[in-house]
Length: 247
Image (cartoon, rainbow, N blue to C red; front, top):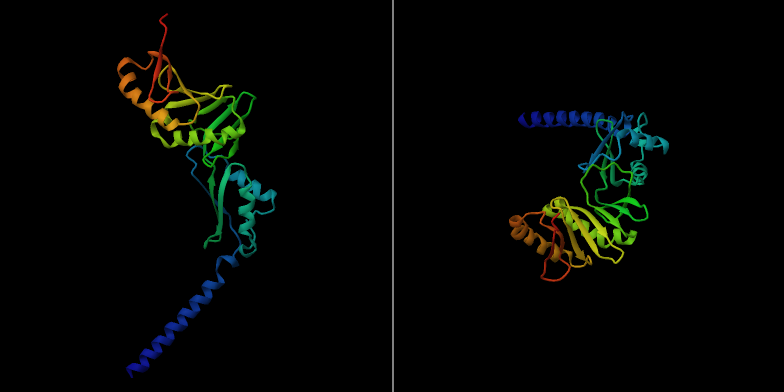
């Protein structure tokens, strides 16, 4: 008797499960009409370079706007490829949600250096060493490279130098301008202190700035940050200072 009751209960549970499963499958996202798009722009601490409105316009121009279309007809790969062509976007991931919407996760490109060269060039260099257009609305306080800066220099040695500055809390806050002379030597303009830092060639910048930081702490903190007009760390194991002329 008990065995028969248990078998009956199991059959009822199986029927209930199958009924629920059939209903769930019939309501799966692929059978729904897309009710809208959710954009999530990540890593936008520097600025939101592209708005939801611009993204929607981009999809409409490419005839890829999914709103109002059956989700099983929406090609997420095509949408990803279309958005990824935007010059300010690094990565895109697009997927359908159980609620019947399309979600698009976007990673913006992150600038670490602005270049304003002697020929009128104006652009950014991002964390991957690639050029970004200069008309991007970036609110971040970035070092500006000026002077005789070639594109290969900006995306090569200067990119690595800017990445070093970006990852170092002290130098990220201190270096305002990187000026390249026609000789290939580098000058830095600091945010704090009325002096010019002469580095010579950019090679060996880690040791040069380490030596300068030690001088800042042991020297300038005692005599004052505006005592010298020029501080050179060009040569190994030396910090050569030029005293400011008294007016």
